[in-house]
Amino acid sequence: MPAIDRPRLLQLPTKILGKRCVLRPYRSGDGAAVFSAVMEDVEELMQWMSWPKNHKGADDSENYVRDMAGKWQTREALVMGIFSLDEKTLYGGTGFHGFDWSVPSLEIGWYLRKSARGQGIATEAVSLCCTLAFDHMKVNRVWGSCDALNEKSAKLFERVGFAREAHLRGERRDHHGAVRDSFVYGMLARDWSARAGASN
Ligand SMILES: CC(C)(COP(=O)(O)OP(=O)(O)OC[C@H]1O[C@@H](n2cnc3c(N)ncnc32)[C@H](O)[C@@H]1OP(=O)(O)O)[C@@H](O)C(=O)NCCC(=O)NCCS
Image (cartoon, rainbow, N blue to C red; front, side, top):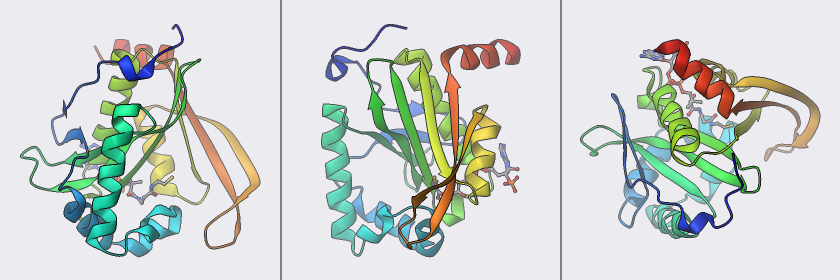
């Protein structure tokens, strides 16, 4: 896989359709839906991520989606909303927020609103992200990390086919001030191809 020299010139889809959900970049007007999704279970989200604390009102969420819409264009973040098939309900968000275009390697992240969990929606959304990364963008590696106690995220990585590459002990302080362990998971293009071949 060659390096991606000018990521802003990559042609990216405006919508990715799955069987249970649709992914698309955020746009102006999505803020109210993001705020409602975050508020559904902000305590659970705050256990694992710091950004929900920035969403104190719908305007904060609108500011966030406009920021993400801009960063989609500049490739500083490739974050998408996870929507129902009719696009009327926002289930959560996923996408890429860390990049080494020379590899190319992308860091993935996600959340689901409480009412959307337990149905395989995140599994499908993350698989669609892998399709975007490996089949469309032709990257070498997708990786991510989660708190070692974040069982739902660890299971999600493993369900999609990521390999646990590291258990980093006492490597960071979380936003509550506790020193925490992290798991690092990765998937290579060749892993993704092997999975696709095995399921055909
Ligand atoms: C991480 C998170 C997205 C996982 O959500 P999830 O609902 O467990 O994941 P999925 O949508 O893929 O659903 C999988 C669950 O649905 C079940 N399921 C039902 N139908 C399914 C299907 N067709 N395919 C796959 N799973 C299915 C699975 O058995 C699984 O249940 P289990 O965990 O009890 O085994 C969610 O817990 C979350 O938003 N957490 C807070 C945010 C967070 O931690 N972000 C990451 C920070 S690093």
